[in-house]
Amino acid sequence: MCRTCGCEHASKTTLKLETDLLAKNDRLAEALRAKLEHDRIVALNLIGSPGAGKTTLLEATLNQLRDLRIAVIEGDQATDHDAQRIARTGRPVFQVNTGAGCHLDASMIEHGLSHVAPAARSLLMIENVGNLVCPAMFDLGERAKVVVMSTTEGDDKPLKYPHVFRAATALVLTKSDLLPHLDIDPAVIVANARRVQPALHVFPVSAKTGAGMAEWCGWIRSQLEAS
Amino acid sequence: MCRTCGCEHASKTTLKLETDLLAKNDRLAEALRAKLEHDRIVALNLIGSPGAGKTTLLEATLNQLRDLRIAVIEGDQATDHDAQRIARTGRPVFQVNTGAGCHLDASMIEHGLSHVAPAARSLLMIENVGNLVCPAMFDLGERAKVVVMSTTEGDDKPLKYPHVFRAATALVLTKSDLLPHLDIDPAVIVANARRVQPALHVFPVSAKTGAGMAEWCGWIRSQLEAS
Image (tube, rainbow over all chains, first blue to last red; front, side, top):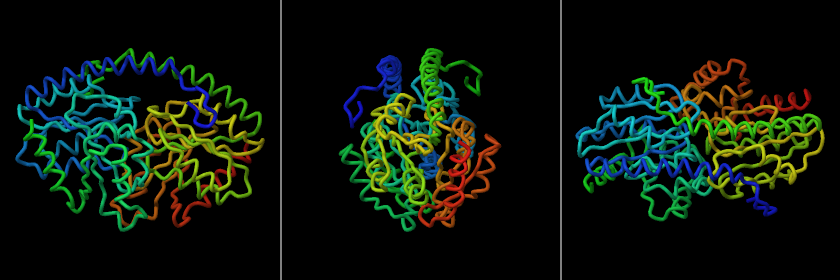
């Protein structure tokens, strides 16, 4: 609805089609969730803009959690650059290329699982397509959605893109080492994020310096222990 | 298609629905383009991730081009923060809130035009929803798509998100003042962008220091003069 003149101009056709697609995805995601819970596999769905630092965070996380079994599914429109980076850490990884697609869906995860074949009592890290918008709508059967946001992105993003923050369990604030060079107060980012989702766990990190990685990795361990 | 095992797992239903929606949007966008060209209004469609610096670039651009008539349409999922910022520059602005939607479409621009009512021989700057993926698919009747990408986003983004770079006429590389603090070579970003779109005009800028703004604003003037 137009906020200024109150007219309706959103496409109802679009909304109906989206609803059908989402319902189909939700059914498959629920089946995946049941299967993963049965096998005590904890799946985390990492969502953030292109360049938020998702892959670098993943590399640092895999290096810190060497004692855990972790498989990775990577999503990008094109290239297998991220899968190559993860493969160098020695972990099983599968790259999904979505082409023009803007998000991973449950069928892609089901397919990826057949490739990475995670063991029982292990972690599955899913790096979604770089997009702070659409992945919020698509359940992948994960335990939790984690927003990955760079401190360089500014403090009002949780308010401007509320859907993904509302759907998330945790927020990782990356590139904290750049804060001295930015006119950005991370406390404002966190306050805005908690206005949208009060229960959000927040982890400021720098994958470059290692700051904050222990807390983030501790939270991941707690998720696995609770499974 | 799965690159590893060659199976087809993309949803054909989704693709068919997208094709219908895009065709409907394209028809409206062509009508808008004809109207804008008739009135010699040059519309630029700014596309970039959340936090790429689109609004800050727009503010600096409006301040540099004080002698030109410029109207602005702002797209965000929620809030009118950006419209408020633009309004403070004294220009006519209309905020579109897309709710769960991930991009502006031609019907939203048609609607926004009825609010900002640009004069003949003027500029219309459109700031799309922060998303490097979906807006690439939706023609808004613009003269040119401009990718706005922060130097902090890393050098491989043009290869990983090729659709938007292929559709673009220009690339503005923002936050160049942060380069001394990053392990990123902007020449690699540009080389990768030109692998996808060889004809791309590239403008490295810092809205903070003003570096590169004259070249970017000169290009905008040339677009208006060619109309």
